[in-house]
Image (cartoon, rainbow, N blue to C red; front, side, top):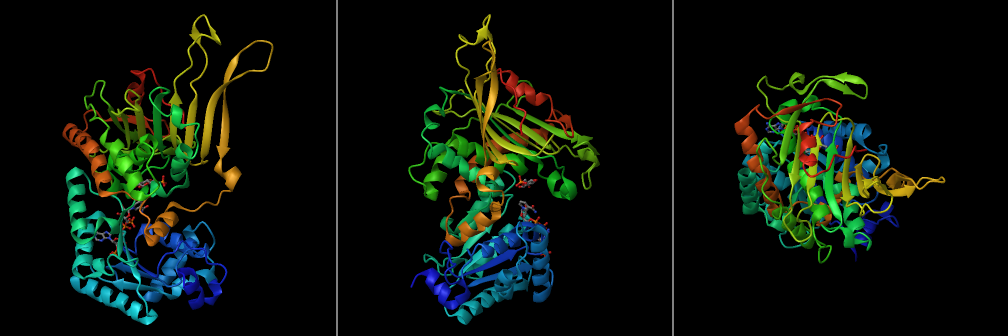
Length: 518
Ligand code: NDP
Ligand code: BG6
């Protein structure tokens, strides 16, 4: 009997509807279940997987945390979370199936006895349904308790349950994955003491975004891009991950992190890796991750000098966002007087391999920028300035392919066209493909895809241990340098602008300038 027909026989209402991708019976345990991420992203994602009939017939959810929360109160909190944050309205009929199997387990993250009772609870579920279940542990707490949780999953025996079968336990680890190379290595070592690498799912929610996944399809399912995706044709690559929001109520966390750790080390470097990697030999997780690691390792160490270095950092000051006055970073709630944390970082990367040698990759990310816009722009070399130029003055634009990650997801090609009329004059024009126009706008949230993939054991969209270390290896010397320098060299920019003028300099020395994104 197949998984789908087994599920249908146990749950007749699924008959004819089941199209899930084969997740075995699963118990998801969320550590830190009273937190923000659970309410805003995780539980709404689980609900939407239910709507799409992608949850296994036997699906159980256990929230874990230090607070005492009665089961029914936890269920009500999750109802509210879905009502407030789900992309689709709460359907009581669909949610009831999960709700009925949702409980809360109170305990400390370093308390062996609470893990022992959690293990018993899950064993009880297995007995009750009369078959094996997969245990999927989602660590959604602050990083200070990642290691005790992992260690207790080991000593309670839960990490090894059904190892080497399709019911083997899995662990999803949230960001931040360490705060520098040393701590990332320690965390990897702690995880690998308890779990085999195939059981580990390090999350980067950018990989769950539709447009980020589409990057691989654009590159490798079309034959027109590959021949020009290299140093012969590309002049530079610009990756922007800009937010118009400030730090809001997360000042306490953010001040210990900064833009480099919060956005560049993980999300932005993943975009670099997917843009620059070689074609993988197949779409299996290891082939893709091997290529990503290779390209991350080919990035040269960055020059850190203030003059003509490869890095720029800055902090936002008060300004106008969408016409509204907003305060500067130092005035935000929870930011210490002596903070020198950057809210903007820009880097110029050189990838020392056959494909990219000599092509600068400029990357930037910041809070309180002019607008929310994340994009990858491949800027091609100009044609020789022989035709359509006046007095040797070049007046055609560079061709640019822009992959808009969010919002307004899509792909744009900038090319030159003749302006209608009796003279031959050129103007850059845009060819647009918009997801929303072609496919409609209600696409799955990143966490839906990622939770589903972890349940079915597909780690393609998760970060491997060596990948995270390769990225930290590049970033850590910058952090050390900035820590030593303190406030010195920290530029400023007005909230609502495109960042500090110093970042223009990174590009100007190669004759480039930042695109106006969005
Ligand atoms: P929260 O700060 O809301 O914490 C989650 C839960 O962890 C809390 O409800 C609390 O549960 C427990 N907790 C909080 N502080 C501590 C502490 N000092 N020691 C032990 N337990 C603590 O975190 P989020 O839900 O916002 O985020 C969870 C994880 O996801 C973090 O690693 C974060 O970096 C990551 N993340 C969050 C995003 C978001 O948008 N929120 C986005 C991307 C990643 P209790 O007291 O019941 O034990
Ligand atoms: C998180 C960062 O990882 O990503 C936040 O901690 C940031 O600071 C967020 O706001 C951005 O995610 P998205 O999906 O809104 O681009």
